Image 1 (spheres, helix red, strand yellow):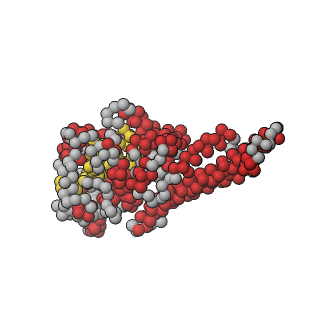
Image 2 (tube, one colour; image 1 turned 30 degrees about the vertical axis):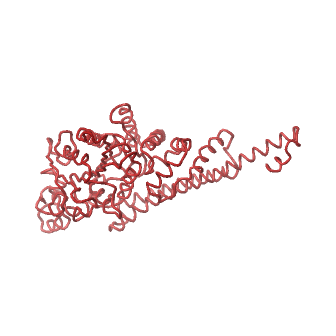
Image 3 (cartoon, rainbow, N blue to C red; image 1 turned 90 degrees about the horizontal axis):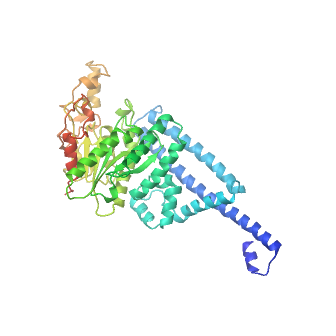
Length: 469
């Protein structure tokens, strides 16, 4: 219709020509909007497919590890899949109705939708399975307007996309954080998200700058917070907290620990250049026992951690940074599981603090160069020094030595090489290099490795700032 009208040139004049032109243009806008709505449906389907794939990986990890259908992690993954399915179905029904009849596509709304979705289509989002390096190349080839549109209007697609530069991820995630706070109905989750925003605001204009590299409502909540810009740092540490960690802890105690690592590394680096320290809560830590006795949650989060490190390597602005993977307690199991995946992880050094094991028999299985796996255990840390291997625990129970709940406290395992998850990292048989550790002042030795002034923190800073070689 548009082509036929245009072919007449200026020959068709008058009121009829004007009205016909308005009708044709309105219909054309509705058709374009409907087409773009269908493109948005394709993006929605891709998002939902990715979320369902992640839930499927968790289910597979639980079942492969011998978990039962009643396993709490399995039930949570299935509930997550059902929620994604319901949300996707509702959004598709609404989008399909708009695509059919143009409802709710008044001119201002249509213009906004067209601008946002056209940017997505023009950007040609990288296909599922793209490596962080491929994502980086895609991002670098976008125009400034396309990048701005994506980070502003589609932050949920960009904020956690490994391979996008850290500063752009930060802009997207701050926008996404505001949206999550505005829509969150759970009181505890809202308080945690608000605490993260408050932490970012307190750090505004201070040194080091804080960058929000991921935020989300998946599972128990996701947040990745950096002190210093990893893209412009000579030394980067990525710390994974352990059992009992909550979303609020990223703004609280674990954010404090990450900042302590940054400050210690900055003091130790000399002329090497700036440092960056990241706290990574990209998985669901076990809230306690018995979940903490299973490796399922560490296995489920290992791939995401490895991909995050690869993304930092891909977006480095200058020379490739020295990256140190740091895991505390159950977080050390996740770091170990990530390092044992095919291809390993993009880290030069691995540091295991208060570790119950990594699932590996020897440090060489973690894939870094010899001499670059480190371990610290406080003398009276119950996780490293008192927790026996499962066969020893079972044997002691069968012998009637102690009640099951008290046994980990009373059965000293310091003389044993085997821990709960494989060889104890501080055992000589494992082959890690030891870092100094003290029990701390308050009778909780498992919690003091990263306290300012502790010998472990000072030694960790030396590891973080020593060039690989």
